[in-house]
Image 1 (spheres, helix red, strand yellow):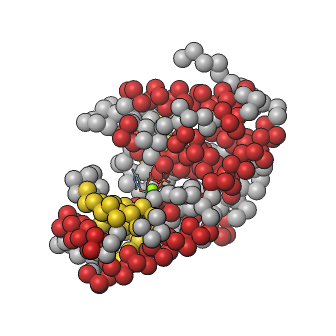
Image 2: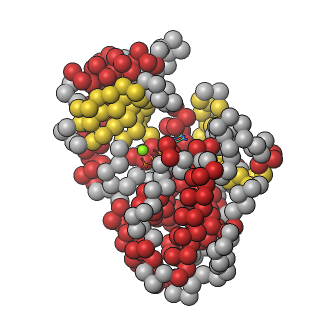
Length: 335
Ligand code: CTP
Ligand code: MG
């Protein structure tokens, strides 16, 4: 690789704090958007309960994990405690119900990896994906939200990283780059390994929350209001952390051997996970362990071409954070 390896952060990094915070603030959804989401969910709950009185409606993903920027789509999960339901039949029935209630663009995508119904609500303008019994996603949403309440810098960092990834075209799993979920886990990992750490490892603390979902035991410490001072000994601000995040992924991460694990709160070796060779479509070129489905590598979508794109983008971002006179603009330039 021909890029210069950076060593020390630029001297004027603190000067960039206010403009980066201003970008973060501009991405936060307005209160009225939240109100519309609530209104839409109430409608959905009413329609669902009429047909399936035992079903529960959960939101997951960015609208519920506190990492959603303004105008995000809503991810909804219907949980139904019935071993014999046929997801495809249920989704087709759901699509029918939604169509007859004047919701627009209703489509059942029953052959997707996670089968869903998509729709748009003309009253609130909200777009939504509905899946069935994807309860692990509801639980990992809670984990992310709980992390977000510990230290404000996580939300700031994750919003800016997601904004960067969308602007640069590297938030497209169907093109071999990473999901928003993966980027948030990368941010959590990064703040866990700062010295002193800014985030703890909730899954290694005494559990105060425990559920078993799809035979996976999900336990972690969730009394996060008790952890509000956790990162106080670290006084790095958002511009320094954003610089550090890109520096880490450009120059410090050992792509050949390492797996990042928010569950363990540290780096694991590919060897101990047996992620050392390609199996089927899983190439393990960048390894991000799912916190609950620990056999899932969220980097599995990344291939030989897209790993190059990703690493070049991390290096570009690191260089901009180090040398560019106006990184707040250059970083987010459309590709
Ligand atoms: N999810 C998951 N496993 C994945 C990808 C996603 O469990 N491999 C779940 C997570 O609960 C995640 C949700 O699906 O929060 C939505 O994923 P994604 O669209 O990547 O993230 P969002 O937070 O919704 O981001 P965006 O704002 O880009 O929609
Ligand atoms: Mg989403």
